Structure formats: structure tokens, C-alpha cells
Image (cartoon, rainbow over all chains, first blue to last red; front, side, top):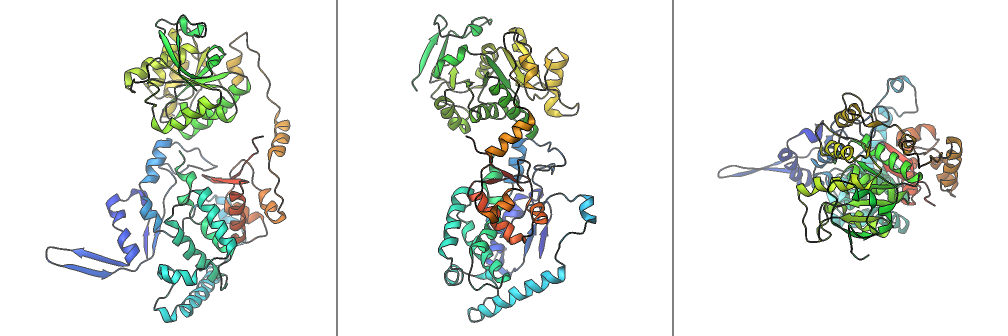
Length: 211
Length: 299
């Protein structure tokens, strides 16, 4: 597990070099005479602020950044890298009162059970293909396992058009939708699974690059 | 819309502009020429504007349009762009003054805006022949037209020693009223405006403050808040799907996050997510930084 806090603060070259291991799950190191390849299977988690001051879009405090600065800051994360990250989620500031309040929440144990259940489904499904999870699906396998009904296709089509999603996001959305369906213990991907998966690509959206 | 050349002897040449020290000998004009003789307020501000500056520019553009004034600016990035765009959105009249010829629209980002201004009864003018390219000297010269055309200029944001401040001082020399928005002392984008106020610019907090300076204009009171809210209720679209409507009703013009919506409703997060996407695709709501807001009917 690799966790990068404040993603845009990292050196751009370092970030870009993550692209290959994320895609191929291998790292190749070239020295004078030899090239050594190591396996590199990891889960990448990263966090970032919406702008340099951290308050863009906040209801509590005014953002003091200029629009150009915000653009520059967000653009430090390149499109190709962003495409290799399956799920983007925006979170808001937590107020003290919220820390204390008791709201409907799921416990970690419950979440764990759900995740294990979904993993089991995937392990069984992919037994004969020598892979373990949805993330390892290749385009060919996706054709048979990530089939969409006509309604879902329609949603996806409109979403691509209206939300300005990148074409590269397509496969990611399908895989995430497959996982959401697994969590639901659904054999087939339904519209709501696709819809939820689309919601998890907020950084691809037009609004983010609007100004 | 074809290109017209208006010389200083032409009847259509704005009288206001003739009064300044070095009026342009001719204007190249595309669009609604009549606007040049309307009551104009020029809005100026930084190219690198803050989010708050954007909000203020939108608010004042809306206010000026409601009062029936024409909003002029320089079609640069930042505040200028916001002034033109908001005015067009509000179906108001806008004038863009360029520092280059028509064959070399600058900045490139605003080519679309340039078309929109001409198509929506606005007007774009420049003193330079079509072949003239954009260069920095021209922009300083352009600013004298931006202020010269207008009854007064409104400065939204200005940094210390910025082009905006220079334009404001120029306007003062031309005998134009200078209006400036007050900013917090430590606000970098407000140093220029605060200083202008020190130098005698009129401090404004609302459109009424601007109107009051001109005896021949009368202030139209905008509909009261309550009426406004009713109007907004009307303007809100009606969502026929019952299941979606429950969520739609929670979304107002103030951004609300997915989590907040989830906490209020009886639905689980996946359902909320699904419905939000559908509402977004059907253009009932839109996602902005900080959450979801509703889209109002523009009719």
C-alpha cells in the first residue's frame, strides 16, 4: 500500500514514474549493462487539497487563491496519471460538532465483511482465468464479465457527453461498476452500479477545469 | 456582422469619448453600434482574480444589467471576462474594447466570447486596424477608451501598482467617476482598490451606490427577497419522478455535499449517488466545487 499525502506537492517526475508500475505491476530498473525487473503490486492511495490554500469550495472559509493558481495546482497531476486512479472522492472539512454527533455509520467490521464477500465472489468467478480481482481484468475478459444492459449503456453514453469524461476513463468505470455490483452480490451490472461508478470520477469532470 | 469604421466626425461616434484628451480618430466596430451612446459603466479588475473577485464581478454585473446600464470592459482574462459573460447571461448589453485588430483576437481563450458578444446585441470596438497584433502598449492605450466611453468605472479588484490602478487614475483625469469596492486590509487583490478609495474614489457596496452618483439615473428597486424566493421557487424545475424529487428538494443554490444529503434521507449512499447522477444528467442539478447546486430555469 502506497499512500501519498498532498499529491501535487510531489516532484512531477516522481509522479509520472508511477504510471508504469500502476499499469504493468512491474518496475524495471536499467543500469549500465543490465535491466532488472521487479514485481510491483501495490495499491495507491493519494490525497490532495482542491487548491493551494485548501478552502476552494468550502462553505466555512473563503478561498484566497487566484483562479490561475488553482488551475496550476490541479494541473500538476497529469491526465494520464489521473486515469490510472480508479476512484476519486471529494471530502469536506469535518467540524468538531460532527466528530461528536452520532450518525448512521457503518463499522469497520461490517465493511470488512462486505469486502471479503465481494473478494470471494471475484475469486470464484476468475478461478479458471488465473487472476484474482476485477482490477486485473484485461479488455477481452471485460467483454464477457462487464456486460452492460441497454439502460446502463445509455447512462454511460449521456454521462460521457455531458460530464466531459475522458475516453480513457471508460474501462475504469466498467471495472469499478463490476466491483460495486459484486459488493451488492449482483451477477450482472445494473444501472445504479454504473451510475455510482461514474460518480467516483469527479476529477475528470469538466467543472474541475472550468476556470 | 460586418465591420464598420466610425470616424470622430461620424454622428454615431460616442460623445463621451470625444471629450477625452486624445480620442481615437476612428473606431473599428462590430456589432450593435447604438450601444456606444447608451449609459455605460466600465468594469475593470485583475486578470489574475480571486474566487471572491469573480463572485463580486458577477454580482455587480447582474446589478448593473438590472438597472438597464451597459457594461463595458476590455475582454481580457479574469474580471473582464466575468463582466462580459455575466452580462450576456443576464441578457444585458455589453461592450468589449480591444487592444488589437479584429484579425488577431486576443486572448485566444475569448474568441468564443467575442462571437457571443456580437451575436447577442453587444458590440466590440477597437481603434486598431484589423491587421494590428496584440501588444502591451496597445492595452494601456485601450484602457483610455474603456474609461473614456463610460459614465464611470467600477474597480472590482486591483493589486498594488497594477494596470487596473493605472486605468482608474486615468479615468479620474478624464473626469470620470471612479467607484471601488473596499477590501480587507491584508487582501492582496484589494490593495489597489483600497488605495483608490484613499485617493478619492467612491466606495461602493451595492449597485445603488453607483446609480446615486448620476442625477439623471433613477434606481430601480430589485424585487424583495421574499418575492425573489417565490420567483426562484417558480424558476426551479419540477422533477416528476417522485423518488428523485425527494433528493432534488434538498438541493438549493448553496452547495450541499453528497454526505450531507445522505445524512438527511432514508436512502443509502449508493442510491443517493445514483439519483444525483441522474439529476445531473437531466440537468436538474450541477456539481460545483463543494457540492451540488440546483440549476434554475432561465426563462
